[in-house]
Structure formats: structure tokens, C-alpha cells
Image (cartoon, rainbow over all chains, first blue to last red; front, side, top):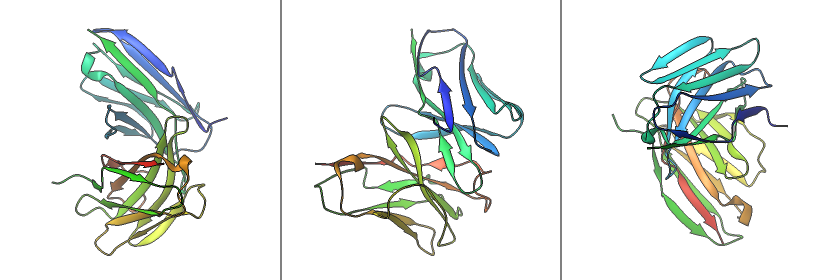
Length: 107
Length: 115
């Protein structure tokens, strides 16, 4: 079993839909990161959060430390949101990441 | 401010050879971490350097090694390459000495193909 699990693995949505990607972890991650990876490999850090909720534009990330669960929401999805979304973080001396959720937004 | 720069972007090597990848962090960042990304395993942590010292290490064999220079630039080396080492190798830099609790900035990666 992986230390960080994401669901779903693949997601296809129509433009404008509200999207949720879930992340559950079994290790003591102190700060959870959400990353976005576009085709070609480049990774962009979207959020780093250790409690509550953060919002950036149409993206919202929430975390429940007690339940070891985080969600990434995308409102009014757009084809440019198509990418792989990865969650994970460090426990002190190790970093763990999920295998990613591949999102495709269709116009 | 320049981002994280990784060189080369693409590399093809033969089994048994060794390879060195380079990462230049954002100016002022002293923490550099390395990751291997494969389709089946996702993003896996290799090691992290801070101020020229390896601070954390993932579960990879000793063929994978790295170092960091006084200007914070980092290199990773893989010796005796195996086909399974084919992957995208990413480095990330951050400013905070605590490492895990700081936003990381990733480079574009080096895609290594072992034939």
C-alpha cells in the first residue's frame, strides 16, 4: 500500500464542471503539497498547506490533518487545467507523493 | 528571478554507463531535492541537500548519489545504469532550512533513457 493515495487516477470533465481530486495519506506529513504537471514534464507547485483551506483563483485546496485527507477543487474547469495533479509531502526526513490524477477537460 | 534549471533536458545512455545530472536552484535557495518519476511509481524522493550536506535520503540503491556545491548547485550521479533507471529526474529548490514545510520550486526535469 502506498503512503499517499490519490483518487481518481483519471478524470475527464466537460469545460465548466466543478472538479474534486482527493488525497489520503498514512504517514505524518506536516505540510501537504499539491503539484501540477503539464505534458512535457514541468511541475508547478500549486499549494502547500498544513491546515484549513487555501484558494488561488479557481483552485481551492483543503486539508483535514486529523483524518489525513486533502482535496483539490477546481471551479469552472477549463481545457488549460488539463494536467496531472500530484499530492504529497514530507514527514521530517522523507518525502512521499501519490502517483497523480490525470485530468482532461474537454471543451 | 530565474527558476530552477536542470541540464541536460534529455539524455540517452547505454546500460552499464554512468550519468551525471545537474540542477541550479533559484538564487538564494540552499535546499535542493531530487526525485525520480516513472509512469508506474510516480514521483519518488531520492535525496535532499542543504548547505552542501545530504540531509535526507530516500530508498534508492547506492548507485544513486549526489552532491551539492558551495553555490548550492547540485549534481546527481547514477552509476552502472539499468534499463529501469529510465525516468524523468526532477529537482526542486526551496529557501527554508526546514525543508519539508516550505514551498518547493521544480525544474523542467531531465529525461533519461537507458538503452
